[in-house]
Length: 296
Image 1 (cartoon, helix red, strand yellow):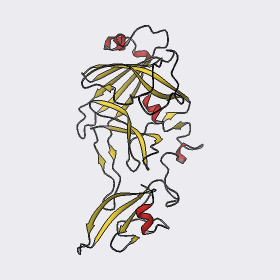
Image 2 (cartoon, helix red, strand yellow; image 1 turned 180 degrees about the horizontal axis):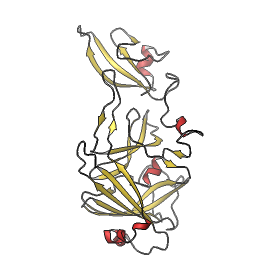
Image 3 (cartoon, one colour; image 1 turned 135 degrees about the vertical axis):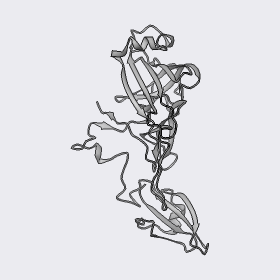
Image 4 (cartoon, one colour; image 1 turned 45 degrees about the horizontal axis):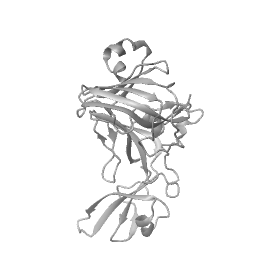
């Protein structure tokens, strides 16, 4: 959160209260109600007389109102001489390359979908690939991904930005495994993602790789990534600091892609006990997890 201020609807003014750290400079009562760069987050009525209605006013990374705002999506942490140099917060399309866009990585109930076209980015390359997903509903989903594209991507991306992949050079086998109970405060809850590169030499299909015996024979080739179901930190208000929510129940990981038609929102990937989605978006006040990608 960039700043918090209170607007007194009865008195027509914005000012500090015991709960407030600072008031953004130059904001009039009219601007507070009409400026699209401001967001009314929550409210309560108080002061014993009942005459006042307080609103929490939050800024959205806007330097006009808060020149000291921390820029989550363009932070000094990633600059030369800092620990994050050489890494970046992945775009929404990079995260789609790990997870499916709209929950096709389903593992708690049977699924068998083929040629799901998804816009994916990696290493500066942007293409639309076809993907197959299979699960018997036993907590594991198998996928054959990065196949030659066959149609328009299922999200709002265009083929002009993400042209169809014209070959199977990037084909990979994926396995998504749900671990733990995904119950509140279960520290074992996580999503394990295994990936084996196959390339155009692969002549099988989803049935070839949708069993543990195939994966057991390719253990040495698998790249494994673990995503804990860490929950998230809810954004603070004037009456409480941010709280840790849903730990052990699900995971949410920020992308660097903001949502242009909804101010102060960004895309994120969310996974639950039943599936994973790369098509979620939420307000940037929340403290979601991040998983950095290497620049090279």
